[in-house]
Image (tube, rainbow, N blue to C red; front, side, top):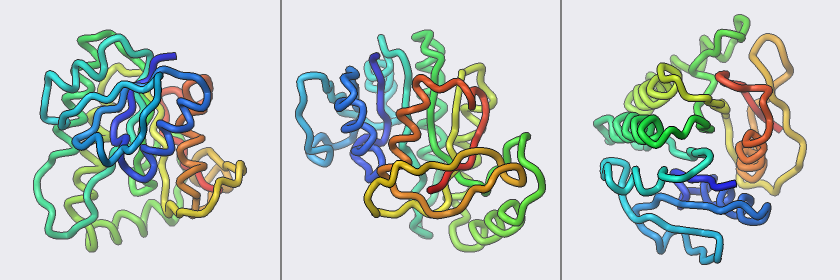
Length: 212
């Protein structure tokens, strides 16, 4: 399968790229700085560019079977603007133009899925995020809406506390108030879940919460 990875040079994105290559997929990575990806492979194509670069986004998406986004907003309180939201909109537009329908990405339980039941995370996390990281929360809402308001065949995994612990292979997934989902999750397991969604149809057009 041909897979485009966004945010490929980030902590989760690099793991996604490596796992895809380990499984034998053809990977196209859109990155600002190829040096940060620090990976060379015969099945890896690197497209240099930013999300605001329409030509680079279209090159990265062209001919792909799916897009996996490990993008997330900056957690710096000084950050302003809607770079990730606008970039995600550009990706969605490019996917529609190239007739690529499968999108797999990330968000947090600060955003609810219609299949959730009332849960403390719906009340606590948005308040905390709004006070501590207001721009990041606005970006999460914007980038998620750009996908969920489209006709794309999406799965957006909601994570709470990513860690750098080794992969466990133990992944919980489901909807708040229905399923027993914790908070902490290793980035390696997050990457494994994202990659698994290429062939798993359980969460099509849904936003499952995931944890170890």
